[in-house]
Image (tube, rainbow, N blue to C red; front, side, top):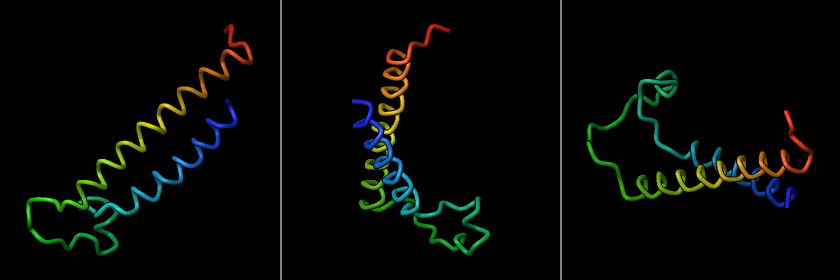
Length: 82
């Protein structure tokens, strides 16, 4: 069970990195330094951007569940009586 959660954690970590890098820069941060500050003034985001947001939040929640699950399994397997 620990091995399966560890593999899932690694996979979701890599997926989170990829998904975050796919997001469009919102400005005001490091993206402005490298020329990402030039954006159109359209207020709404596209359907693809909203779907990317949903997928990123879902992957983040799965990552969080893996971290908590691994922590609990490690605590009870190796005796965390501190």
